[in-house]
Structures are given as structure tokens and as C-alpha cells.
Length: 353
Ligand code: SAH
Image (cartoon, helix red, strand yellow):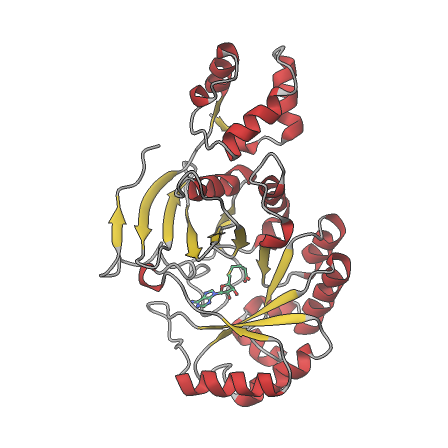
């Protein structure tokens, strides 16, 4: 059966009208799904019984199954979701004071090949549908008590969002909609390796979200090695497309830089990076590498991190060193699918359905 989450507004309205129901039921159904957290059509108590019955005959509200649900002591929760057509992805809820941030996936696997990342080790199987992306949001929202709302979304789970642009944007529009999750566009982040043609299309079609570009190296020689897809693109083209997005959106960009011990963490890399970002309105987000079992990359030493930071700050780069959350449940990046559970995590029985 089709997930109702696959339908956009127009399609749901058309379905209703075809069956003789008024079009305004569409907004009612959407609020039930996104805001009142209905998990069945039967729960939608102000819809006519006949409509509820017909919806239930035609659609489902969830297609995935939660294969694993983990919770860390810092409040981070992570779901491993299995889709009927095959493929498993993960998504994460992070709690940080008032913030309730979710990190969602855009593809099963990833084709970008970043050498340090667990998500792309087996390549990409397929892109997720819009409904599968929305389902992650709703399932994570469902982990919150009724009086708490999701505040931020980052598309930083498995996959490359710009390689699945249409479905990602469709799902994020739902997240942003007044009768959807109603999360403001500046609290929604698309993280990308930087695919210029897709990025230009995003600039033309929907330059409202916050953009984060995964740079990881200050020159092409090193980026070709760390982010292999760069061989066909080059840093200059990535920065140019990102500059255009900034022009159109007016929102400060973030550049992400995973700091890999003895690979991209030397003072000269910091100096080169500062030169690259000079004159750009951007925040540099430096993330110490979160080791992946079986890969030879290391977290930099405390001293290397400090030196790297000093070099950047001395050059006036607007830099933030990100703390890791959910380490103990491998919530960082594409790791759950392959890892065995860590010792100090609390495993929770998966919710039914
Ligand atoms: N494909 C997109 C989004 C997914 S990755 C992108 O490349 O941006 C989200 C971020 O997590 C990227 O910056 C990625 O480089 C980073 N990341 C992946 N694996 C990591 C690891 N093991 N430790 C730290 N950061 C990691």
C-alpha cells in the first residue's frame, strides 16, 4: 500500500475530490499527521467515518519498521529503519537544552566515497522517497513528549541530499509548512559535499534553507584524496556555486571540515583554509573525526586541534569547533548499520508498527 506521506497537497486534494470529499479535508489530515501525531487514520476523530475508512483502505502512514532504537545517556536517540523494498537507514534525535534537533538520511548508502565516512563504504543502493524522508521526521518527533516540538532539522545522515534533490526539497517543504511541522527554513540545514549543477538548481528553486558544505580540505590535491568526487568537480567550482547560493539566500553558509589526524590537521592546512575563506561570509565548523571501525583514520591529538584552531582564529576565521553528541551509540555518522552495540547504551524495545 502507498504511504500517504508520498502525496503532495495537490495529489491528496485530488484524491479527496475524486471521492466526493471536500478539498479542505486535506489541511485537516495534514495537521493530524504532522502536528497531532496521528499514527492511524482511525485516530483522526473529526474526520467522517467513511473518509477514515477509505483512507485506511488505500494508504498507510508508516512503511518502515524500526529495526533498532538506541538511547544514549546525553539524551540522544537513534533509530535504524528498515524499508520494505530493502535498505536500512538511520536517523537521530539530539537534545541540547531547548533544542530538539533531528538528523535525517536522504539515501540508502552514499555514492560520494568520502574515505573516512561509514555511510559510503558499500556505495549507494537507492535514493529515499519523499515519504520515507518525512517518515523519519515523524518517527523522531514521536519520541518527544506531547509538549515538546522539533526545533531544527539537519540533512546530515546517510546519503548526499543534492543527489536526491527533488525528494529532499519536497520533504523539507513539508517540514517548513504551517500545517506541517512548522519549522522555520533557517533552522533546516542541507549538508552537501557540493555538487554544483544540483546546487545551482537549489539556488534557483528554493534558496531558503541553511546550507552546509562539506569541504574537509583546503586544496584540490588533498580534497581529491579525502572526497573522491572532488576529482570531477574541484574546490573552486564548489565555492562558486556556494557563493551563488549565499547571494540568493542571504543566509550565512557553513563550511564543514572533519579534522583527520595527520591528514588535514596541520597548521599549513589551517592557513590555506583561512586564505580560501577570506572575504566570504561563512562559518567554519570543525569536527574532530569520529573513528569508524575498520578504517585507518584517527581523531587528531588535542594539541593538533588546538594549533589548528589558533591558526584559524589568528587569521580572523569565524570558526566553531563542534562537540560530538551521541558518541556512545555511534550516532555521529552512518555507523549504526555496521556497528555492534557499544557497552554503555540503553537499548529500548522498538515501538510497534
Ligand atoms: N553527504 C552530505 C551529508 C552527509 S554527511 C555531506 O557530505 O555533507 C554529514 C557530515 O558528517 C559531513 O560533513 C561528513 O563529512 C561528516 N562525517 C561523516 N563521517 C564522519 C565521521 N566519522 N566523523 C566526523 N564527521 C563525519
